[in-house]
Image (cartoon, rainbow, N blue to C red; front, side, top):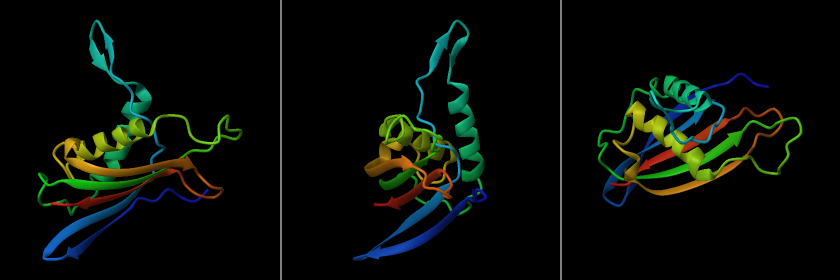
Length: 148
């Protein structure tokens, strides 16, 4: 397996008279679907797997220096989630709902403050999930486009 590499790049696109930013990044963090908060007599908490995922994703996202200037804008997201392939997968596709995988990345991006104030600002999204190919690293390719 290749070394895990974090990458990101900004582009400026011109559409008519509007200029908007596009951020493309690859997070080499093992994808985890967002979990529901657990409730105990001491308060609420998230599962250790999900909490560890958010910490690791945040450690990469905080390295991004060029943030979107207008965090109140609306956004289009394209996401390719590349899941770890077990030695003998029980299914052709990874377990977990797309929306739960999306939510885990949205929460991490929201917390990092690189794009939006709240994920309610995402007005369009396309997400796919699959197992990693041989020699490919797991993680997520994310394209964030500022629309307004």
